[in-house]
Image 1 (spheres, rainbow, N blue to C red):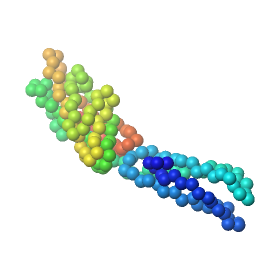
Image 2 (image 1 turned 60 degrees about the vertical axis):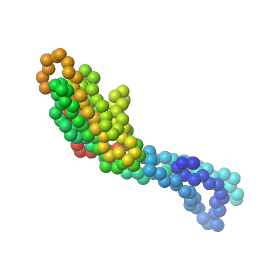
Image 3 (image 1 turned 90 degrees about the horizontal axis):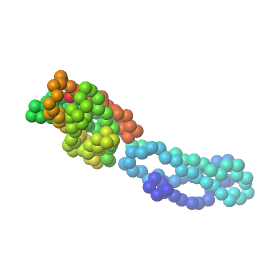
Image 4 (image 1 turned 90 degrees about the vertical axis):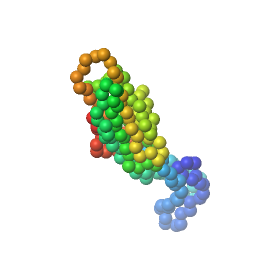
Length: 178
């Protein structure tokens, strides 16, 4: 009770011949994307009847629609010379609430030794590999800055992939290359 439904107490009266009754309760709607939740209804102190099962389980189904998250390379050309950054854009179609998107990096370029990452209009956490889009934000960018080192290297690429998570659906495209 409290944030998901309104707690209540009362009596349930059965007329002669009745074998079931409905108990009404109020669900407190919100805009929070969460898993379905359950609570128990317990009956007690029967009068004139024998109670075989005194507990019922109620499921509150979350009715928020999952956002769809996409990624595109809006500037797929990056270079150690300059250095010239490359840019990925992560977008979502529904902007209500904060959304933490799990991302994976692959390709021939390595995060840290070959390029660094900075976020625009969102918060990048390199430790967890997540990008947080704040409430009301439909898009955030990740800029990759190549490390200008003395190594002689061929052309490298960085691939960004939106990883699956319960809070959103992975859209198309879910992977982009710079």
